[in-house]
Image (tube, rainbow, N blue to C red; front, top):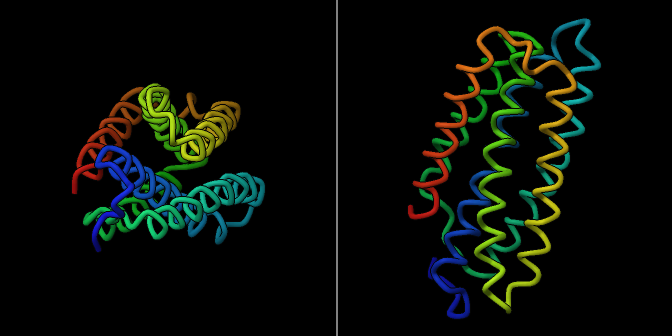
Length: 181
């Protein structure tokens, strides 16, 4: 797939990485739901996760559309992020509700920072109002997910600080490689 002639390289990178990130988020929630949906007594947690997952799916659907419309090549790491996202979700769910929420809080904190940086960059590009509006909305959703996770006890997870640092570092690495490849 070749890049659409009207899509500058940096915008293509933004679309590619945001598509990859939203795909990863959907898969994290899929992994968490694979655990919580099967365990009695976790209906409230599963419902909370399902609500956040619906937002992530809407974000992914938007970037799926942009990938096709703008003829942007998706990241070659999609299969890896597919497996890694599901595994991260399932493992943190197996560690308990608070660990699953700690995962969400860490991922969303990193995505919030990532989207903020993109919005700063997009301020200088006058013909990307639609992309700017979408990222602004999605960033607000991600901040809401982070707050939901914090309210649900994310910071009470055993090893929260270490887990958060590791997950955020993984997100940063995934962002960097997904922009380019």
